[in-house]
Length: 495
Ligand code: GLA
Image: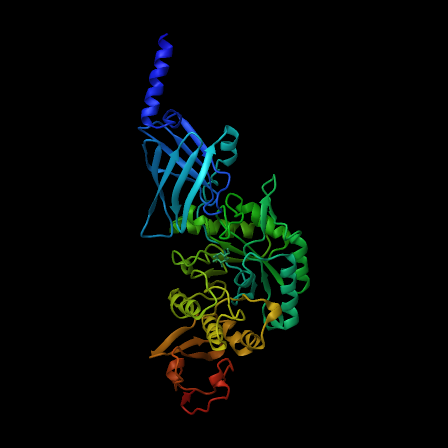
């Protein structure tokens, strides 16, 4: 009789607090989401404790288990905050989880995404399957000995700018064919880099497999090598790459060995979702060092391309972690505003790089059609003057004659590939005109003249611009159409 009475009392308490209050106040509850949008990919919410001391997490594909901060109940709604990223104005985001008899309605956000998902109560097996396993702690920082793999800035092609993730084995083979047939290979371009979008899932031993569009990565590498070229691949220190594919989180050494086994010659390591786990200078350096060590340990020479968008003054430690090039900026797009901002403003801010390790202002857009021929000449000139890696980003089967002329201009390539490897700098600015200088081997100096205005203008350069006591000989690159005829000069050069 007593027992029945207490049950009745409990039910009364439930109704006054919201339908399923007793369920959510149980020691631990979890709900899963069957259709998670790919970013950030919330797959589960877990809540524990009672109403007074509630805590919990949301599990995401991109960032693993994200702890709730300041969680509190109000009726049947759980409110909490989470750490946010890439948004200095909003270091945290607010979330709510409305619980009812059927499940949960979760609303919140992270970075650029607003999340609104309906979930259902989870079984124990589902919780186990979705529980995120953190990677072991990062090894301590160390210093990787220099090698001779990138004595001059790497030259090649990458799939991203033109094809994004719409790539497959056939397209990559076609690019290797076109690289050779067009003469671009002969001009010095060697690396054929597969960027994001080649990855499939891991097998039961954790070995990363390519997706169905790349049936045999080793065979593809053999094909590319057979053309006298080198193959590049892309991955991330995070669980997800920037396009949402499987990253190397928790599998760094294993993936490095897989790449070596396939015959990969170049690895781009893109921070992406890793920025959640490695958010300060120390952890970013150590995560890049970890892959640097792993690549070296394979014994296969591989160019190591760091892509963390120039964070934490990467040019000061890129070499130490084994990097041969490191991105200095976010992504380039095929327009003058993006290219000129990177080339004139952002990349020059980085400490000079040089033989062995290069500042990387991102891949070329020459040939993609979003800029005029003049603008593409400016793009190529800026990159060459700053000794940037020259990684083409267009469809090599459709290189226009104008793009070909820009990409294979032997004098401009010689400036980029000069073995002193000096990162050229602006030496003079007058109105819209800029003069840049890059000292070369043998005492020669490359000068670049840029007119950033829309009006034709007359520019006079002097030996002083070149940092020389006098000019003995002047050669022109043929890069700028203003320079189609060799300028005459005595002590001053007028173009
Ligand atoms: C980031 C990189 C790009 C490209 C994409 C692929 O945005 O900066 O260069 O690799 O990821 O998803």
